[in-house]
Length: 99
Image (cartoon, rainbow, N blue to C red):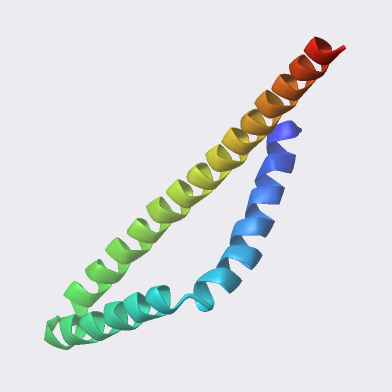
């Protein structure tokens, strides 16, 4: 159950918030435009069979990237949680010493 909740939170944050952030990022938009331009040039040189293979390859790459993004985001959330718990423990420890 805990992993399901974690997955739902990750899905919401990465799909909605991250997409909004990326769409507002000039560097990301420039890279996306460049990617599209290169793809159009490549596409013009390929046979129909080659286009199908390239598209399948691109889909597979996208799946890997999405998985990596999810894992990295979740690990970042875990790291932040551990940092906050560590800082809370340090604060509690300091309060004990002050008494």
